[in-house]
Image (tube, rainbow over all chains, first blue to last red):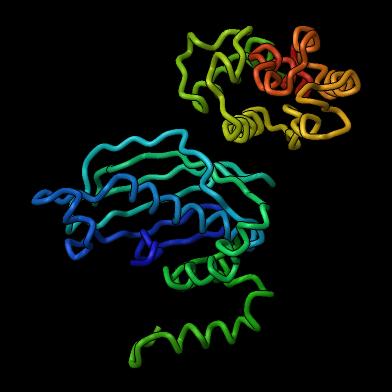
Length: 187
Length: 130
C-alpha cells in the first residue's frame, strides 16, 4: 500500500488553495479491521489527506525548496463519519505563510455535507537526515500522480508547471504527461 | 493605531486559538509554558497568528532567543552565564528576567515568558495609541 491519501486534485491554484478527492472503497484492507462488520474511514486518515492536500500546496508554492512537515493541528472537528462509497472532497487554503512554515485551513465534505474542519500548521525543516524522505523529486512525483499539473494554475491564471530546474523543459514535461496517458485519450 | 487593550485582546485570541485554552486562563502574569501549556511547536503557530493579526514580522529567535541557550559561549554546566544573562536581557527588553537571573538554569528559561511580556513585545513592534 502506498501512503497516498488523496486520489487526485480537482483544483490547484498556486499559493492559494487546492481541492482534492478521496474515494473511500471497501476494497481497502484496513476498513475490514476498522471496524469488523462496520467499516468507517478513520478520521486520522482524513487528516492525512487534508495534510497531503495542504502540504503539497505549500511545497509547490516554495518551489519544492523546503522540507514541509506537518507540525501541529491546532483544530480538528469532525461532524460525521465517512464510509465505503463516500467521496470526500478536501479543500486546503493557505491562510498565512512565512520563511518558517505555513498555516492552512482545511475542510472535508461528503457532497454538500461538512465532514471535517481543521487548521494545520506546517513547518519548514532543514535537518539533513530528512533529505532522503523529502526529496523534491518525491513531492514532484506526488503532484504528478495526483494530477495537479493537469488542473492547476498559477496565481496569474497561467498553467501550473514544475519549477524550471526540475524538468528539462516544459515541453518535455508535457510530452511525458501525454505519454503517461492511456492511448486514445485526448487531453 | 491599536490601543494597549486592543493589543491584549488580539494576543488573547491568538493564544486561545493556538493553545486551546479558555479565555479566563489568559492573564497578564500567566507564563506561556508553565501556565498555558505551550510547547516548542506552539511558538511557530503563535508567531504566525501574531504576524497575521498585527501585520508585523517576527524573525526567528526574536521572541524566544533559543540560540543563546545552545551557545557554549553563554551556557556552562546547564546554567546561563552572567554574559549569557546580559545577552538575554539585551535581546529581550520586553521580558522581566530578574527572577530568572537569580538562578539561571537553562531548563527553567522556557517558563520565563508571560502574556504581559508578549504584549510588550508586540507593542514594541506596532505603534500603540495612548
